[in-house]
Picture 1 (cartoon, each protein chain N blue to C red):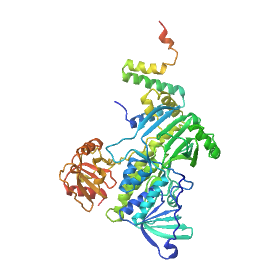
Picture 2 (cartoon, helix red, strand yellow):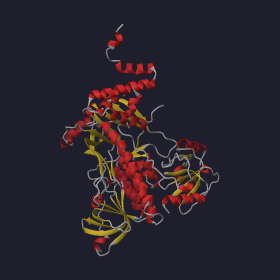
Picture 3 (tube, rainbow over the protein chains, first blue to last red):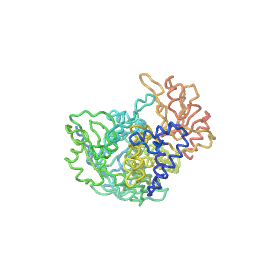
Picture 4 (cartoon, one colour):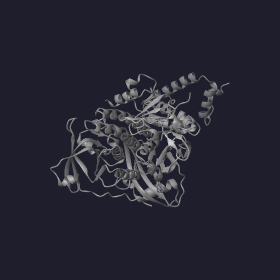
Length: 68
Length: 538
């Protein structure tokens, strides 16, 4: 289901509220949890890997993935 | 060509020569700005004598500030009802393409035209002083309104709810008093009427974000006729810039200033010219039509009715300009107040009808404030680190993610208010998807002289009968009944199906401000009249 503009704007409000905390560790925790929950909801490995690849395209390969 | 603001002459009020005679007006409007003039025109066209007091002697404000420039489709529909839309459109500039740039690269764009189903396109740009001048001229033509320039309200003495309000007014030639049944404060964000009543608006925020407007007339450059908004423009130290075209080949350039920038230094002629050249190129030759530094805040009175004193426009609520919701919101205030005040003035409705003006427009103002605060925070996250982080994430993804591009918020453009209306109980319960919405002004018949849905509406309530095939207009003292189908050609009927918020079936009850009161209404005329009577509190 696609988002209306209003729904998108509401979503951004909630995201800002989610991470609007002084502790940066806690902030990362919340974002990580959100990612995991979304991955679970999406339940589509290709889509999740494509999104990750988009972000990691300019980065060094993840060393953990290089372990034979 | 530089526009010279008109100077309206001070005319000595008769009260100054008859101090013992306390003149009585049915309604006095304080403030000859957008909202006050629109309201005055609406009331005059409904047959009421109106007095407008203004402490200035011109339209706009001194210094040729254009303030509002973007007039939304709903405003054009209201102006059409008041007979001035064609003048605004003829003088104005209709734009259709908006581009949003991040890091100097376009990340998203939107088109507002064409809208062949509807009477007006999305937006028309015109300097506010031109719109106000058109309103002044139209008001003069009614013969029912008097605008008193250089008349400043000094004191407001509200009596009980059932007694008139007394005003003390000062002029260059002395002071006088008058009384009025209803006083409407349309005197802007520093409202004198509000001060006189000791009212203080609730302030939601007051930002440190500062901008400088530099309106220019380009002499040797062709600038695309598009609305551009840069979120973080390299030519403006990585801060936002807005670019709009207005009438007379004038361009509104609005630059977000750096936090440490000195306002006075930024507003000098050399500094402004350097700023414009950084954006548009060193070779550009231009005149500066107007400039000014501004800040914004969000605030609203908690109630827009205080006995016999009402508030509208910036006197009632102030929003940041992102999305053009200030001026357009004030005009919608006038639209919502005019017919109600008229019914009360003529004794056709109790004064409690005006409470509904207050509640509906307060709700609309809160929605405007909610929307503009979001836009303002996206453009200037300030101390909010979380908002900064999300903005950075969105901007960095915007060139490759359509969703991120849609999250960029440089202003959600003014939309018609959707009111929470109460379905008259006499109509019985029914699903009412369209209730509260402004009726779209759909082209229902094409050809040489097209016909639009609003052309079918009367000055009061209108029943649009979508079932009857008999062309019949049935005027009554409270409204008219119109069979829509015989007025439409086939294309127009299909356009109605596309544009109306729900299927055109049965009868719809339309308010005098063109908002839908109820859909799915019975064709029984007696029930329809009873519904109108219930609505206005008879």
